[in-house]
Each structure stands twice: as C-alpha cells, then as structure tokens.
Length: 144
Ligand SMILES: [Zn+2]
Ligand SMILES: [Zn+2]
Image (cartoon, rainbow, N blue to C red; front, side, top):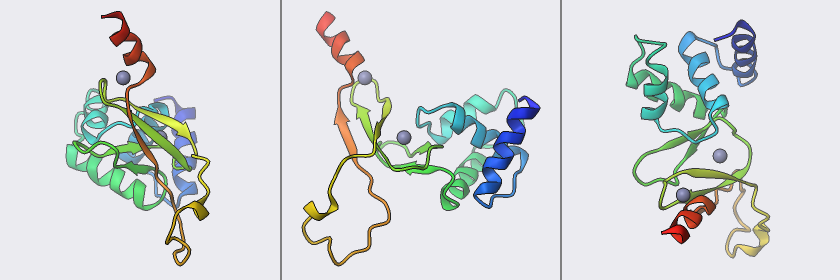
C-alpha cells in the first residue's frame, strides 16, 4: 500500500471515530477500492497474500466493528452470506440470480408516506433489495 493511500484511509477511519490499526486500514481500503459488496471470505482471501498473519475471525470482527461505527454497511441481500459495502450512504442494491453479483443503485425515490402504518415510527435507514437478472446475464442468455 502506498503511504498516501494509508494516510487517506487513516483519515477516513478517524472521521468515524475508529482508531486505525494495520488490519482496519487494510480492510477499509479494500472495501473502498472494491465496490463489489464482498463477503468476509472474499476480503480474507484477497488480503491474505499480503497479510499472511490475517485470520478470517479478524476480518469478521473488523467488518462488524466498521458497521457498528457506520463506516461500512452490512448488506443482507444474499441469504447465503453477508456482504459488506464501504459506501455507507443511502443507496439500494440489485442482486443478479445468475452471476450473484450485487449492483449499486442510487437511493430509491420512495416516498415514505406511501408505506401504510409507518407514521408512528422514526425511520433511520431504508434498505431496498431488488433481485432478478443483470443486463450482462440477459445478453448471455439471449446468445444461447
Ligand atoms: Zn448477472
Ligand atoms: Zn452498495
């Protein structure tokens, strides 16, 4: 990792009140660079070659902590495995049933007033999950 990159990620973590450690910097930096909504396993296997002492448990605990501090989002779209997103701002997700990729969509233009029974509640976050087939897989299917 370049020094400038380490500095940027350190500042980023600090802005969420997170004390930067080598693992936290590496994992946060991975999440910022890879907007693919990786699983703990994906983060672990990508970082392992450069961080041989890293354990899967450390990755798991670190992302859990990043989520608690608001630096990262837990995405529950995939029943098989939790995914993580280093872009913790309101946006929606689409998962393709064929290639399993999770795509970012801009925040859904939903009017909360449209949801019956919600008036008495104070809404903090809205997660919208769409499932179906992505354009790439639609093209592939058409070619068969
Ligand atoms: Zn697809
Ligand atoms: Zn996302």
